[in-house]
Length: 266
Length: 313
Image (cartoon, rainbow over all chains, first blue to last red; front, side, top):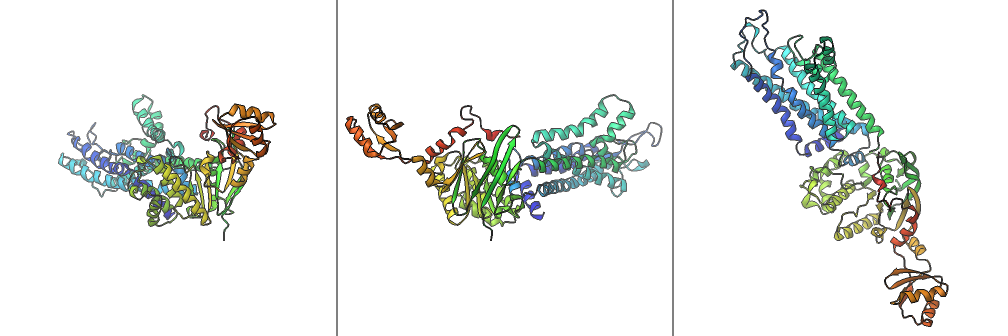
């Protein structure tokens, strides 16, 4: 396995653009966190008063994930689709006939690279976003300040966001093993993420249906881990259950990809 | 010690309705260059992919050194293959392309530079493969095949895209690898490419074995008892010889092949008919002729321009 990891790492870093896209994961997370914070103004209504809700500033400064996941998707799909068209996979499976080992090595290397850059990005977003919020007048009086970085809820949201991006990577790897074409795989994952998420927002439907769509949608359910205000997140589902929904999609995709890799002729 | 033969027995593969390989059996031995020849779509590439465990046979087996490819540990150390010179990520540099392959089998990075040097790509090691000519990509593919210093080499159409210098180089390389006792299997759709390289040929057509023979024996059989004759008066010569009971066919603008008559009778008949001629000699068939004789019936797609090797699921 060590050799397979070494080989797949060599592959990942020798495709031009992968470093830049990984860098974009960090940059977009941190940059978006600071930018979103700039647009916020502290509410002027009396805290706790009727119709006065404080914004969930933690979820806001982590909202770079909505965009950064596209860079994650691009990196992870490329890790697999670069084996096809042209068919480098012939050489890979000649060097290592164990299909499961090749798939596992790519999953570990691709996901680890995404987790590392996502961790840097999330840390950057929290630090930069908090500084901007403080400067914008979110002073902490009346429970309106940005939650402290040591707050367990903030840590959960931060760690959850890193895991969310890691799971998007696994989902993308699986889709790419199934579809093999880069554009097809990237399109399918983007549709799966944004499709139900946008449908629940844009299409009028009863709350009951909307909540069911959100709880089953990988992006809405997964991102509920960012919410510090119960019931105000992207889905009614709990934070860890939400991530588990996304993990279900990711594992199903990678498992299907593995079955196809074993069964199909190369 | 392992005897590094390639043993194909009763191998079969069907894609949809197309039978690509049909109960194919043959053995490739160490120490010689074995040509693997057949028209486009004959099933050569499919057979090679099954040897390397890339495609799963519907029946039969292909064993290398007594084991199936998928059972080999660090396979590149035993078997080196070039299947498709285009199988290189265009953005990857030549060195990195070989380096990841080396790492999969625990080969030292220094070996990458050795094989790059061996195939004459040392100066292009840091260049992206996307900018390589087909000839350079062939060399890169051959470098990959040599990476693990393997006992068995399986090369699919390695001559494609090489310039005359490159062709001479690869012929020398293949002969020296075989002389070192390695097992060398080289496929081609052009028999002439193997004329000065292969000692033994396996000819297939429509997925079936047509011949498995030494090159010398194949040439002798194809030459038969024919005689080559050069004359400026071809039509008259044909008339005279046909009247004497010979079978005559046209070989070129001023050349004929004659069978059914010994050389002295041919000369006597031509002299008798006052037909001028020069050079009367036993016909030595080219490998190409021998091959065309063998594959005439098996060339499935010639008229339509299809290439069955492109028919893939």
